Length: 445
Image 1 (cartoon, rainbow, N blue to C red):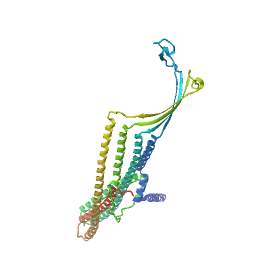
Image 2 (cartoon, rainbow, N blue to C red):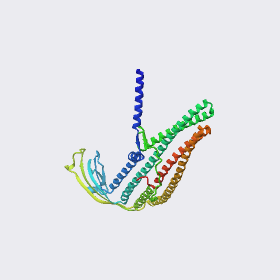
Image 3 (cartoon, rainbow, N blue to C red):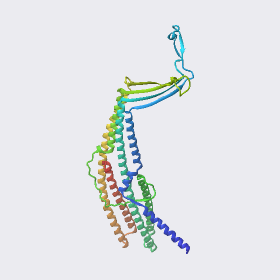
Image 4 (tube, helix red, strand yellow):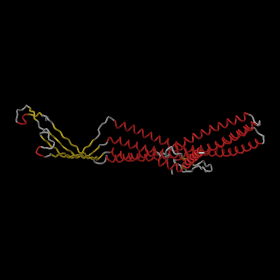
């Protein structure tokens, strides 16, 4: 009696845990998946950090236009002060003779404050402009990553829906085959059918089980991919909306301009940067001018005592001036650098034209694909209805003894094929829809 109560308690716990797991599976719509992915995807976070880095580079570029202030200092003690050779007649000695004199002192210390300010530096101004363009480039990269993310989330979502539908159809087919195999086995025992009929149904059942296992395995992989795109843990399990073939798939009609696609805008941004780099190279021919000013105080002593100065004081000195640098000849280094950069700009012009051609072709191909998939979907829907009708008629004829078991198996197989083809056609139509939106650059609102 106690054992029965224990077994009953265990069964109740297992059922409760199973029900809790099912209830814990949150159902996500496609819109919710997109929103979560846009908020949590790791690639987007990395792209955002790149944007922050570029913004910091702008502030760095501004720093080259601001003054620099430095304070330098040193302490030096020389146990032996350097001797200087001077003409002896300087101090009343004989002409043509020289004497050694130690003109310095053993201890020297000083502190200097120096200020420099760039007055004319074309390269610094160009670098600031380039940094601002890089910000736009990073923003375009974030938009491109968002488009790719939305596309991948939608494609993965549709694949899961397809697999869920195929899993349901395969389970239904397996159940029908099991029932048919059971009835046929009973008929075989009664001598109404042959062993071959039973064996063919057994093979059909085993193949259906293998197909079901493959579908479930692929479904698990796509669920994991969806979680990765949404930056969610692989556990717990989640669920999505099932396939709704009543949804209307329309061909998007937009005023498509291939010059507004992100990939073309990125090429044009790269060209702008290359043009600034060309100007920066050419600016090497221009002079640079800067202002400098410094103020120093020196202290001296005859022995090693950092806290003591001769006469108890420091001796100040200050300087104010302008530095300039005028390039005269660099061995044609700037000339050939500029030629190379000019070639890079010409290549970017060609790349821009190629990108426009590719964008126009992608949009045209996507439009053709969605029209073709629409026709295929309509055909497969009619084929499915016909296959269902044929199987119903064959079953009735089989019950009346008018057809063989092989006809039932063939009709069942045809229906399975029609069901799978219908699901595939609908998913391909949805896939073609997002392909067209991607080709036209309308995936993002």
